[in-house]
Length: 252
Image (cartoon, rainbow, N blue to C red; front, side):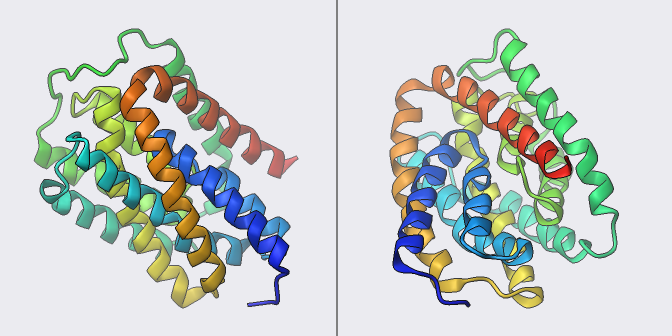
């Protein structure tokens, strides 16, 4: 790891605190931390790898907080978390085999579609509804697909997990957000283990940022539990739109 001035590390920790807050509610914390790491001097691969180090902490911390609030049973989620973990390793290993740049071209369109859906779809609230697929089918299809995507590309994975719980598993917005966090942490961990082999993360910086992510996630989950869909929906729209615009900006 290159020498980094103490004030730069402090700014990265602050960015991680903000990212943890955002990620615990709507996902998309990497929208803050990846550019911050690049501005701090990390090359893109190192930035992504370091982001995986600290990116585990926010969803894991949020999952624990949501579980304490009675919104998710983490023990019942371990099979889905395992599926997300394995699929993300497969996705990360395919980075050099699949046309990632071509896939990225369609990602802003997908993210904007998510934002429009959440903003315009009536009836998206905290009430649970009938399941459209069985838990087994959900764990065997959507979870590994999003996990694979998280290892391969990553932006918006937490939001995709959450929408999957809403649209397929019949969860209300708040409960879907809660149930998405352990899966997001698992797929981040799978990506990290892979990137640790093929890249050189800034481990110390990543762990310091991870501690800040925990603090931010705790603040975010408390706010989300109190306000539910009224907070989650608008923040999700803002975050997914911002991710789409950032990706398009990279190609201009």
